[in-house]
Length: 170
Ligand code: GDP
Ligand code: MG
Image (cartoon, rainbow, N blue to C red; front, top):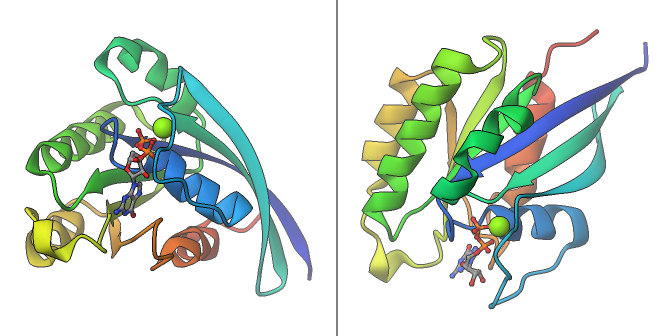
């Protein structure tokens, strides 16, 4: 039977990791070298057909800065899915991503589908976080893991498709 699912999805991660760029690429097929910083949070929606189901994502792109941290629960509460984003060329952003994973483990919906995105994988020569390290971390913490590039389009649609595929069917 055909089913239609509304799924709230939140992007979390350090400022500059590429959250807005991933969403912009997914929703509009665009990429900006000088993407403006997000203020508070931005909302987008996008529909995907996966098998015989239609998933309508309601996407909350959060700001990432510490000063907005207290707002984050508004966005991840009740979310069916989260993408935690770090930048493969920044160890700090990976540490920050782990903090978000911990926060979701404590406060988030336990059935939430969680993805870890190692973004900017086009910057191989600046890489600070190995694929293996992130993959092991993701496995140990029940996330699925993909390295993405909003710039070169690697794995951008794939991460949203994989989330859609894993969402519980009504
Ligand atoms: P956010 O703060 O997490 O929303 O990050 P932004 O989406 O604003 O991106 C921060 C900066 O990184 C911008 O200058 C983007 O153009 C750049 N950026 C985002 N994704 C990528 C990527 O996959 N590769 C490269 N090389 N740069 C990226
Ligand atoms: Mg942003």
